[in-house]
Length: 266
Image (cartoon, rainbow, N blue to C red; front, side, top):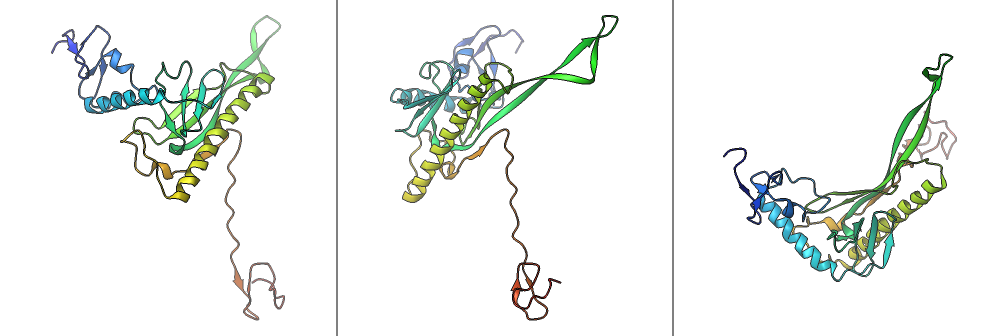
């Protein structure tokens, strides 16, 4: 086949216009079909035609489920997290979640929630006696930051949802940044809290709720999310002190001296 031969979408059968082809592992995809895929899906080039068709079926079912999705809480400012506490689901969208066909995610499929901080550093210069721009000694820098939320999920088509909370780089210690930081923390707390709550209820009842997606990996509901914050270090687990036996009286001890006869630990 020549470079400019007509191509047809292997999903819908429509002719693909110039510059409109989206390559698949074993075929071609038109722009219209590609636009219906999940915005969090990034493996299109390595996906087969059959896999894309399967995802589009999932997306059609997702659109139907959104008709009965009624958020009880909305978190965030630009990109928002819509939470339906009654159905145990949430969706992430920066516009209209129904028009966007935002993916509905079950609380119990969340495996990790965290915030990420990206630092931007620009050097500040001065001028010398000749009017030339030169570095300070030592160099000085201006720092700005962008904050995002990362949600890892057990889903057959994507594993990560990442979106910016701050609309642009800003001073980390400004009141505006602290407002966005609080919004990000609320999102993390809401999703991790709901996920843990549902996982506990499922474990207590021994019932795993049916998933609207038949391809959902088995056992996804049993996973509990890990919660991280960008400026918090995870505490290291301390090992229990090894015990020892007194060479004098044979008593087992954990301290530096025998609790029975006072003999120092060898």
